[in-house]
Length: 431
Ligand code: HSE
Image (cartoon, rainbow, N blue to C red; front, top):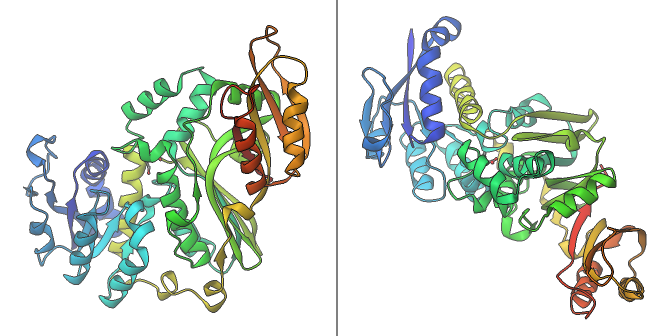
C-alpha cells in the first residue's frame, strides 16, 4: 500500500481537527483509497504547550524546517495563516518537491499568482479548499464542477463570525459584543477577530473567488471593504419590518468589461436564499451562463468543517499523483485581461439610510432637501414613534442612487443641527 507522508505546519484549532480526522479515519481511507495517509511530522512553534496528537511514530517539532527538509514528505499542510513565514514555507515546500495544502486566504489573496506560478514551475500543486467557506466545496465546484460556464456574478456570505453575530443579534437579541464573544468561544473567529468584523477576512476570500471566476488578481486595497461594526439593533429591527435582512455580502459582478467588486453589509429581500443563511453558515450564489444560478451552503467556519476541507485536499492530492497547477488559474485569458475594476464612486444601488434626528416639525424636509440637491430620490420613509423633542431614528429607502452622491449628501447632512449622529447607510442588492 502506498504511504502518503504528510508534514503539518501549524497545530492550532484546525490542525488539531485535521489530526483527529486522519487518526479516526486512517483505516477507512486505507480501505477506500488504497493509500495510507500518514502524518509524519507536526511542526508548531509552541508544540510543547499543545495537546498531544496521540499518534504513534509522528515526529513533533517546533522547527518547520524539519518538515521542509524531509525528502520523504510528499504533502505539506500550511495552517499557520498570515503572510510571514507562511509564504516562505509554501515556496520552500514547492521547491523541495512537495505538494501544498493551505487554508491561508490572506496569503492567496495577496500573492496567489506568484505562488501558483511557482507551483507550476515546480510541477507541484497547491490545493486550498478550506480558504473559502471552510469545508464547503466551493473551490472545487468553481474549478472543476462548473468548468465551462461563464461567471456573471458571485455573491457570498463567506464569514461565519459576522453571519453568526448578525443572526444572533436578531434571533436572540444578543449585543454585538456578546455575539462576538460566543463566536470566539465556538472557534469561528480568526485569532485576530478584527479581520472578521471589519470585512477583511471576507475581502480576502472574495479576492480568491474573483481570480478563480474572472482570472483577475485584485488587491483588497483596490475595492470597497466595509465591516459590520456600525450595524445596530435598530437597523436589524427596521430591516425586519421592511421584509429585508442584513447580511455581510461579498459581491463580484461582471458588467461589460468592468468588475464591480465590494464587501459590505447588504440588505437583501427576506425570501432570497441568502437571507435564510443563518448562524455560522456560509453560502455562495453563482450566476452563470449557460447554467444559470447555483447556490451552495454549509457550515463555513469552525474546527471540523475547516479540517474536513483540508482532508479533502489531501485525499484529492493523494489520489491524483501527477497533478500540477493548471495554467489558467494564474494566466488570465485575453478577455479577462481587459477587465477593469469599477470604482466604488461609480457604483449605483438602492440605499437604506438611518438618521438620528430631533423629533420636531420641518426636520424631514431639511434632510430630503439635501438628498434632492444630490439627485437622490426617496422611495419610502419610516419613523419610530417616540416622545416629542427626543432623538428618533428615521429610516429612508432610496431609489437607485449613485454612491458618490449619497456619500456627499450624508456628509452634508451629518453637520445639520437637527441631526444627532452620523447617518448609517446600508446598500440594498437586487439579486
Ligand atoms: N474566521 C473565519 C470565519 C473562519 O468566521 O468565517 C473561516 O475562514
